[in-house]
Length: 120
Figure 1 (cartoon, rainbow, N blue to C red):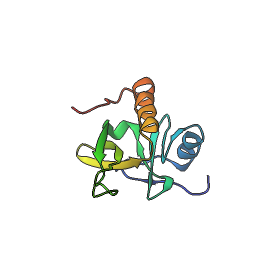
Figure 2: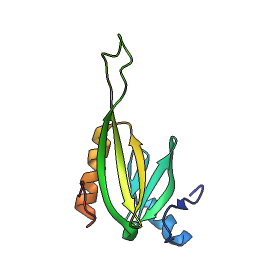
Figure 3: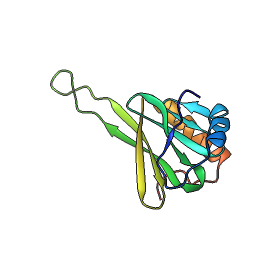
Figure 4: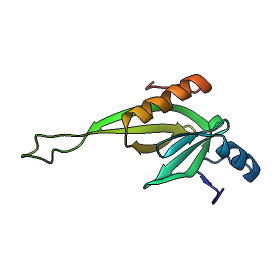
């Protein structure tokens, strides 16, 4: 592991646990899902931060439409985000490049964790 991810939550994991967990984590764009933590990226860098799965309350997808940029605003692009709610009220939003990667990650959450997926 080149560098140790920083915790976003108040709860932290030991370096040994992080190293083993990150090694076996499944990658999805800038994020990765391990057995003990969710690793999130920032500004094009992958797995810079982590949130222990025991602190994650809910994850869901947010879709948006970009402002038109071609022929006086007639062509739009879709933007997709992963929203992570943790530690009760905190929220982290991560932009995904491809919606398929985000859907795969949400399916992995449904399959491997008991964390609620989708808006309340």
